[in-house]
Length: 98
Image (cartoon, rainbow, N blue to C red; front, side, top):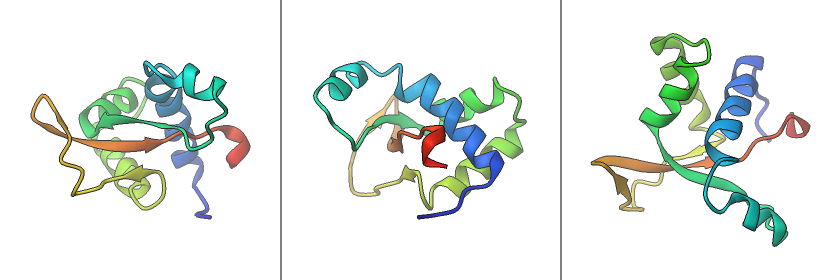
């Protein structure tokens, strides 16, 4: 398990509440008992969430870059895109995982 910095924890909390938990099928997956929760998103959407919640652009980019090692799965072979941008998998994060 990767030890996260406070900055990473805070970023993942914002991303979970603003992207993952607002996803179309999140509640349904929780109700079914799924534990491997997350959501497909784009880097620009994640950057937007962070910059709208106190990070400047450079800080947000650095934070997301550091999270690609543990909580953002950039699968170069998934072939998914949204509005011309590569889609990545964002792992659901809760404070209890800290």
